Structures are given as C-alpha cells and as structure tokens.
Length: 173
Length: 163
Image 1 (spheres, helix red, strand yellow):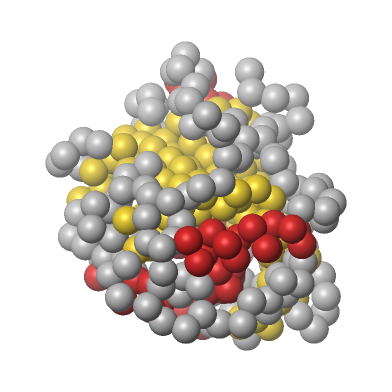
Image 2 (cartoon, helix red, strand yellow):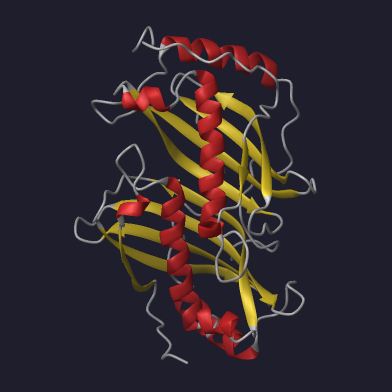
C-alpha cells in the first residue's frame, strides 16, 4: 500500500453531492438518431468519475507516475432524456459506499441550462496496483480523503434510481 | 429483409478493438465497450428490419432506456471480439436482452451488457409498438432463445459486496 503520494493534492471539495464536473456534447458523440449515443453517456460519466478521483488525489499524475490506476468494475445507466449536439451538461456525484479498495458512486447528468435530468449512472470503481494490474488498497492519503468525503455524503438520501434491477414490469419469464 | 437467424444465442457480431478505443490505462475504455455493444445491438436490430435503414427511411428508431455493463476482463488494441446476444424478454414496444463479449481467439469473457431497448415513432420521437414485420421476427427469435439459461450477469444489483 502506498503511504504517500509524490505530488501536491488539490484542495478537497467536501460539498455533498460533488457538483464540479461540467461537459458538453461533442460532434463525435452524436449518432444517426441525432442525439448523444448511449456509449458516450458512459464516456461523459467516466469523466465525472475522473473528477471524483481527482478530488481523492488520484488524477492523471497517479497513472502517469506509474503509481496506480482505477478500473470500473460495473456500471448501470438510465437514459432519461435526449441530449443534442453542444448541449451543456452538469454532473453531480454522490458517494453511496466505500471500502478499502472500491467506491460505489452515483452520478446524475443534467442539461445545465434547461435543468432537466438526462441520465443517471451508478458505478463501482476499484483501485489497481500499477505493476500487477490487480486490485489493491487505496493509497493512504486517498483513503483519508475518502473518509472525509464519506462523512459529508453519508447523510444524503439514497437516490431513487440507485439499486435498480432491469426488467419489464412483469419480470423475466 | 435479411434471412432470420434463430441460432440461440445470436452469434454473428464480430469487431476489433480500435486504437481510438484505448485510454491512458492502455486498455479499451469503459465507454468504448458500450460503443462495441451498441454495434452488436445494430446487428440484432437488423435481424428485425430495424437497423440503419429503419431510421434512414424515417420509419422508426430504437432508443436504449437502460443499460448495465459488467467489466470482467481487459481487452487491448487489436484484440478480436466476438459478441453473442440473448433475448431475455419482450413486450409490444420493448426488448430486454443481454450481450456477452468474448475475446474471439482466447475465448475469455471480457464484458456483458444487459439492455432495455424501446421502439420509437420517427415523427413523434415517442414510444410506439414494434411494426408487425419486426414483432413477428422478435417473437421467433425470442422463442428460439427461451430455453437458454439466464446468464448470471443478468438482473444484477450494483453494490459493494461485504466479505
């Protein structure tokens, strides 16, 4: 386990939910239906996960310094409303749970100007040891930040769209 | 329309991991797994007459309502992919199915993608029943897939499992 990180960490943002990440629908994200394609919602959410990781102290320098990586294990997306080219997006991120090497995150994507909910993404991200490419515990400074974040996020109500199991209402035969 | 393939599961879709799909971790990025899976959805929809031409000719569209991906193992640039598709359920306007992505030569499972797809009326951009030609084909493929075991990745709830 890494006990230190060899770079200066950004100032910790403890506001819950995290509400810092902004983005825009790029031309290459739009498909033949004239809206953001399903896959690029996941790309956009992955960048929001990146913002959460940077806040923990695990940004690009963590990977470039060959210290560690973070891998997504699983992800669940609800597509609530379409987004067109150039639509500005605002993301909020709630920490639902954490352990020694994983975080369970819930992102909400809003049209930043019109305010509507476009999509949600529930995801599990795991810390990875750079050399072995296998899971390993968070570096100590990141784990300390994670505990501070948990203190501010744990009282938030659980989002209605978290913990969904997919199915038609009559269920799988 | 193309000849209907009632193999269970559907085992037609092949792809290769493109350079643009690789991220700074040196493997296929999480978003591009979904790009690859979405192309497998096109292969499925073509079976029902609801592929690209369906939208190009302004007949209808298909929208994804919900998606669940499990990332089971890494794939790297140039890796060949084989994607199989199993229909789990359907109704008058929706289709519930799961894709499984395998490394085509090494055989390991790389990811799964469970999806809920809805038929959309082109003019109103709102949900609408499948056209008759599609419904007839969906019924046949669903019947062929009905006896397949449900993959363990289907119907998953996300969470950190306590040991």
